[in-house]
Image 1 (cartoon, rainbow, N blue to C red):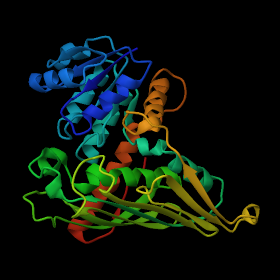
Image 2: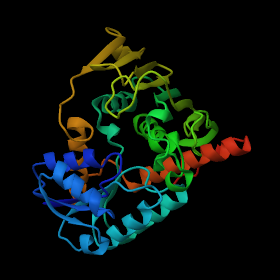
Image 3: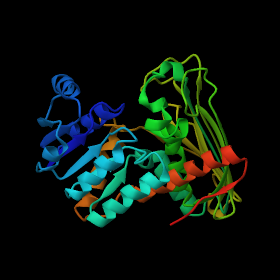
Length: 355
């Protein structure tokens, strides 16, 4: 099949292009961006399988490709995505799919009306540790969920181009929560199988840089099951330098605790390990266990499991199985983040609407 990339100047565009290039099922790739200069640079530096470049969106959408990965600026994305749906294209979109929940709902409605598949790049769902943790919880190994703890801390704003659009509220919609914290909110929902129904939060801008979005946030959750949870997120590390693939640039942690046990892992430890404890009778011979993962290497975004994530989206668009994520996952995360912002502004706990 032929595929496409919508936007080549996004921080993740090159990674998404590598994914399309490594997929043996993709024989040709079309590129679209408003900037001809950006298209030329990408084609010269990473042009494998690229068979056409366009600055005219209508002309681009008239090409014969089955699906696109969209990597667009947050404020521009909704209108671009809606035009792609109207042209009958299936789209896997970068998160978020809009600056707010209202923007995201408009995108979701348009995809459903056009009867095309809309996915969101929450590929950490396919990380083997997330898959294993979800199964262990689903199978009852930690019992009734009691608490969840998440930490997503990374390098300071000064290492990340403070003048860029990611730190403009008008363009991005939000800061650490909408750009990186959203991955952990989605993982909390996915792994627990539970829904966040209310949020109490404090967000702040503390970096000293000239930005107008939050760079640190602390959230408290209530789940539908009655469990509670917390998440701390921020651009906070002073000594780790810059770069997305900087191994020292993250301090991340996840824990799920129940009446009968707990699961926890640090995403920065290599090789990746999931630690599990259970008081359930069938664990009596080994109540404390460690699962170690050697991830399949790949130049794709997310490595080997990133390839699998995109291909399962393609199969779902072909009518072969369930998609790994949907636009409604992005919408629910956006509702939680909107509730966090409202809570921080008002000083009150805010209910999160559910579908």
